[in-house]
Length: 410
Ligand code: DI6
Ligand code: FE
Image (cartoon, rainbow, N blue to C red; front, top):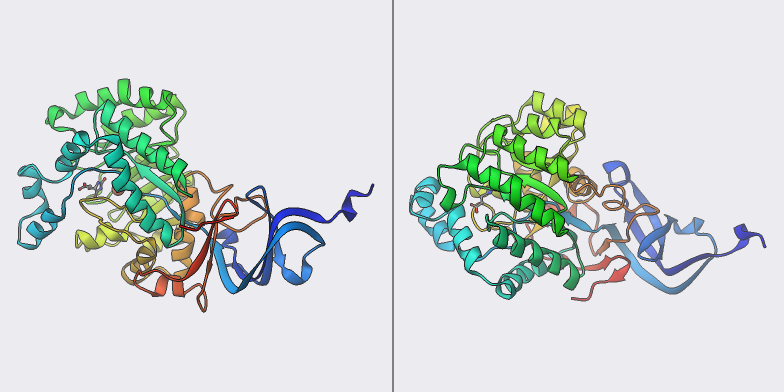
């Protein structure tokens, strides 16, 4: 039998849509498009007029909606215990971030609360936050540990993250951020804590299959490039990719270190410069921009967007959802802020939460664009065009969401 004459088999046909494919990192729109979905993946995409004969169990008319890849939030700290809204009030009353930290607030207060919170309670609060992100079109979520800072609490955070991926219609990538800050019992003994991270925490949790990538906070108030290098060497030994919170408050050389280790991403990067951009371009390291933290800290140093463009560094955008410096519950709001504050174009902003975010997680080959062979994570938006996704300051735009080809109902 001539196989070429067989109709294209699939589970569903999506038709009557405008496809913003993001192939190659730009809109790359296919007008009047159709897709064939098979086993949760895209089996065919193109102009509906060129659709070959198909045999599918279901056809969905998307009513001319704009279909984009599912949104990817590639940097969150959404699992944590406690509440720090009082710190927000204190800062408005004139108390500085460092004074709050000296009084026992800041990261350490989240660590204390997270350590005291059991799995189910941590899970419930994390799920509530994740649902808000999902409702606006997020289909892949990165979640970091880093508020446990001891073996059991870091494990519990990562287990909560894994459980979210099992119970919710979202793909979760976990990142171990045990090198977030020295915990109180290691105050003034950063090297000893890094040894604990490298000798025990990372190998144990990696052995339990809880870690997809390793991260650290390279900053005066956290860890030096020398200390982070030890963490990266450990990650390399364990066969895990790395990423880094780099040049957020000062330029310490984090981007250069990240590039040397072929990091997936360097995140924040406000204080990075042209040399950093060049190094990151050479190592294929994505710059993850976090305008929520920039806004919350009332930062004025802009990330070197022009240098990233000039050297061809992929730029991703994320919520940095965390209780201290980025209490952000909207990835689309980050698209708007990246345009307004950093002067990204709406097209760059969409690439930042799709293809480039996928690259920042090391899943660019399977996620982030609408292309044959990729996972069928997508959102059909009731908008006049893709610029609307960055135009509105947050809020929920009407949409139909798909995860692995299936409609997300909740
Ligand atoms: N960068 C930040 O801005 C935070 N962590 C990080 O790596 C601060 C997190 C917090 O204050 O809880
Ligand atoms: Fe962060």
